[in-house]
Amino acid sequence: MEQQIAELLRQNQELIRALQIRDHSSSHKVTVQFEKFDEENENFDSLIERFETYLDVQNVPIANRAKGSNIALKGRVENEIDRLEREGIMEKVESSEWATPIIHSNSKNEGYS
Image (cartoon, rainbow, N blue to C red; front, side, top):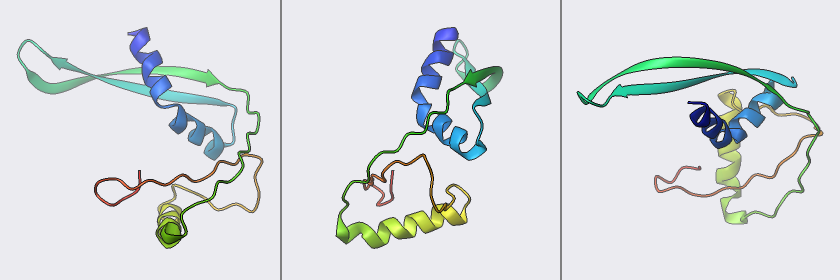
């Protein structure tokens, strides 16, 4: 079970980093949920076990240089950023010690991933 928790945390490093920036804190409580299925009866009613752990992370600011983007997609990228701001997923700031470039890619359903 510990290996599953470690693997899930590895897979969600980007989300954890986003939570760190949003909460402005160096220690975060993360709740990890695993679903267990009754494999013998193939019953997919799930039982959820909760695991709580604390992540102690040194918040050393990281600033990555911006990369050039496709000018043809500029409007679509700006619209997506506006949508993320409206939904409270992103927040506009004047300056920050933390920075990462926006990398866009179209998915099959013409959205962004």
